[in-house]
Image 1 (cartoon, rainbow, N blue to C red):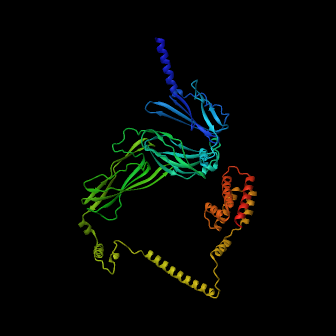
Image 2: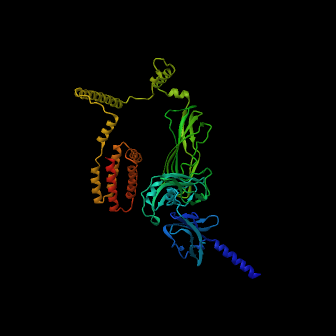
Image 3: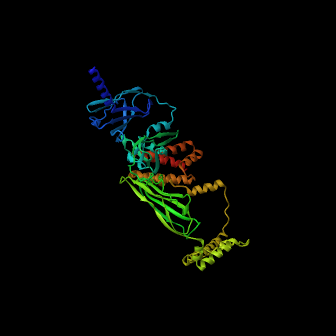
Length: 580
């Protein structure tokens, strides 16, 4: 009986220890065509610090039936706050290209940890013939991958972290087909874009694949725990249509805010300042509104934080504010200010103390709460009689005049336009500047009339030329705007010989623009349609093919003189036919 219990105990221990290390492999689908890329994801999860003694690297199975075209890996490590267990995760991605068709077996991946070998189960995938009816866009999308990288995966609640969205492809031209970028959407996170400006193309990134940064954005997790950020998406366009591609998901460890927060702390995380001011120009009068501005400035979760409101008081009445924001989202954080414009109506004369609510925030840099307390604004209010007594004689006359002009309005003259504005001075500098402008305009008018008169005299003796037809006029304009393409051909030949390829492509773009303007076409697409209608479908198709070759050769990492020579011959041949 004792030996049986010992056996059961050892069995349970082995099962538990086996569960601490998990090695798995998955493919994005079960069947592929001969031109598809096979994406394998190998995940290694280790729970517990005693299993972190990895003795060997991940050993790959026999890939003699595939071409390994790309690889990449990322490792994450964090501690589960509830169980105090160290968890590390390593994710490896492989991109394979099949060499043969039919059912192909992918063997086991092996790794040795603490003198124990862990392996995955082998599985089969099916490689089929290429479907001739498949869209070109599908093939392109299989060669384009999105990857989302998060800068800091352990942050506090409502503390931002920066994410970068990159696109990878073996064909550099496919990177320019990626459009319609959509950032992640989830109730647990708030996402704000920083920049959608595309970076320069890196011709050799993971596995000799070209890459480009598509977007940079900021993530604010609004709850604690492990929060999963969904993948960002984009579309890959081609002549056959559009295909949607989605990036990887990312898990963020969101730490709870420390205990001991002030009673009136809400959700402000960052570093802020609060100010209050009276922006009304007139004296504060009882039962008349005054404008009070509450400004919160600094760096943090400005767009989703709860602002401090004006405290209620029996001495005044407060109306709902108008909120305006001047916030910029940058890589260093969200900075700016939030303005709350209040209308406050005093209920009594004398000195009023207009206060804001107590405000506190958590500073993640110092890992402590900061209590700003209340902001107080002292405002002296007056009764209507006190306002009248404090006015000067001139101000009283102005008020009586304005009241008369507002109430008495004749049908002949709109007298309200003659209202006297108080405390308004005559700016002599402005008056002199306006007079000088008027004199200059008058002199310019006289000179123009004189020039027009002298120009008209010799034309009276000239015979009137007969007007031609619309076609003749259009032909005359084209002849006048006609570009001498031979000069461009000679210049391109010199640039090719000097191997100044950057200037070569700039000169070609100038040539193309000049020729398109000659035919009143603003874009290359419109010009291709014009050529198809007036020069034939063959010329239009040759123009489209040349534009595509130019783009491929322009952004190729290594340029050959033979390729540039072939391009020059195609340019001379095509534009000589167009300019006939």
